[in-house]
Length: 486
Ligand SMILES: Cc1cc2nc3c(=O)[nH]c(=O)nc-3n(C[C@H](O)[C@H](O)[C@H](O)COP(=O)(O)OP(=O)(O)OC[C@H]3O[C@@H](n4cnc5c(N)ncnc54)[C@H](O)[C@@H]3O)c2cc1C
Image (tube, rainbow, N blue to C red; front, side, top):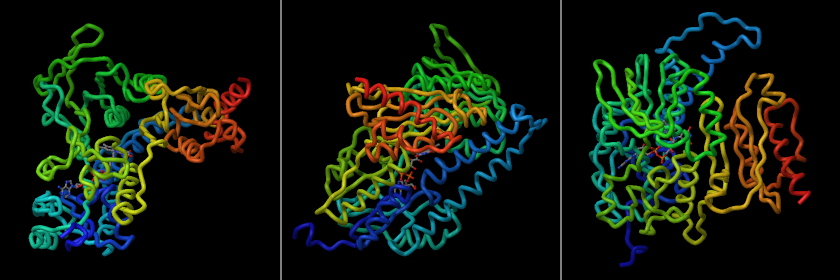
């Protein structure tokens, strides 16, 4: 019997009910496929809602309000003795998260596909074994869930979409034991703030949590191995954020090498090399922000022959693994830990299992990344670093927020916008915004690049005055004139 003649319990089984898995299931089910989602987390919602985007941005927004309230003098406003109630700060974050998690739970149980609470692993290339989710966890439907997950021991499917996300990476540094540190999961459960904290790492999570802690009065020391924080961005962008971090009182060490970490009385100490010297910092807490790894260990992928590379499931642009009936999407593919990419990949996989005759592929031309600090850092398409690495010719022009109407009104003078254009055609090939609402402002350039606009077209597009968005017209005009002259 061929694969297509065999009968399976489901057309598609999606492992993981986070952003990528839900997108895949929704797409496959609405194309008429008999679909099942298996979710094995303690809670339903996925990383973005429960421990990623939403809680961290809720906390960062609180930190921004705190900062603004404490620095209102430029507008003639005196707000003395600004204080906060940390329990309320966290409670509001929890309320926001609960709203989103409840909604996701409803979406998963809406009847368009079957939803099973269990942890899955492959028994063979078309069969999953299901294990009950540990008791006493979850969102109040424990008994019902337990019954269902015990009843269903195995299931078969013609296609699979693996969307099992990521988990906090083990330490690459022998002397650092992550279990003795705070991380992005445990920090979200703090009931009181430490007085001081050492942040290990300089990526998005490290930077966002650093500013949150700093703005709520914690003494923060950030230790980063690379010469700059957020090393994938251009150094002019990250330099602006480092400047602001230091101005707000944070101690930032870049270009370091961690040598040791140990308890010092009631505190925790970190010893590292910096500028040829051995330095020692102690703090009440150490925050481990040295990355995440794909969550694929327990799936039995080796046994069924799915190719992985350092735990990440290797896929093609159709999101297929080397076994064409097994797709993988989101963080478990390990390349971009960005939620809208997980969703896009889920939609592509869901479409492709339903329509193998007209497959869609992922395209990362408009890859965007946003860091939600203040100033925010956002970039789409090529950065100068990427263009240079790939030998792609470009022209670049920037314009600072300290010379722009709306940002001067807002006293938001840090940062700049930058455009990269093809030197011949003028097509916009990259944009970067370091500044107020950078994560929103970058969407103008995403739209322009989506439509393959040139800098001349962007410069000619009407922009309302005074807005933050009109700042894009300055580098666009500069580049358009330069290209017209050459
Ligand atoms: C602190 C932090 C802040 C972030 N902020 C942002 C941001 O601002 N913007 C942004 O774009 N991205 C952000 N991210 C990244 C973003 O959250 C992730 O890229 C995204 O949520 C990944 O979605 P996913 O569907 O791949 O995985 P997940 O949402 O993690 O879903 C995986 C699901 O699979 C389940 N699962 C795992 N193994 C099994 C199994 N064997 N059987 C059954 N179920 C299983 C898990 O319980 C989980 O629910 C942040 C991440 C972190 C950690």
